Image (cartoon, rainbow, N blue to C red):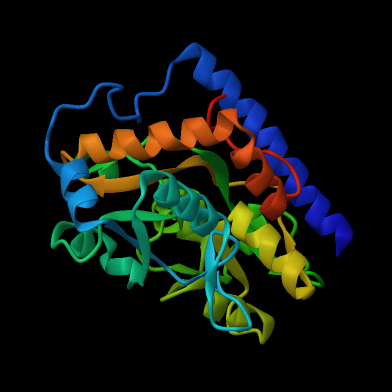
Length: 279
């Protein structure tokens, strides 16, 4: 199992280099402007003295419930520190991931911070910070499965989380999607992986960082196929036009990167500082 986890971490580090090189050629345009207009979003948060963070509470290591039923995770640790430095309370609000944009736009939450992949479609509907972590969509199978390539999945059934970027990745992988016998959508990945373990599906399409964490934490007989579907980046999503709030959160994260807090928290959860903040 250690070999599987090490492969995943190496793949993530290699992915960091590939994306970093691409960013040098074409600067990212996903971040909010450095000087946001006075749109009222930051003032509203400071006035109510709390930030309501929407998340899938079964998405380790980004946000999940521990044995004491407390919501913990990498994103949770980052958000708690940001809220503390802003002098406000952090409220963690579990949501249906398939309805996350609706929760945000109706004011039930103030941001989506939970391994939230930046896509062109989401950028058109929301305000994002700059990306803070690199990721990829990968295929997880049982360790003793005969599959080694994407082509080996022809005629098989794959699972993924409804409303996740895995759905987009599969849509973009037209040949793979056409070759599959079927696709099953799950509310969250823990259920999907349980179904994979008992043979309900043949493969799960999911985030590399989440797959690595599950294999490492559970010790179950899963492995990650070498071929990835798509590289991607995580960002923090806010209501469209909430630039002042997005900028303040990012400014605070950059300060945390400068004083070593981000590196400490990232190493705590991933074993290495793979954060993009301040780099």
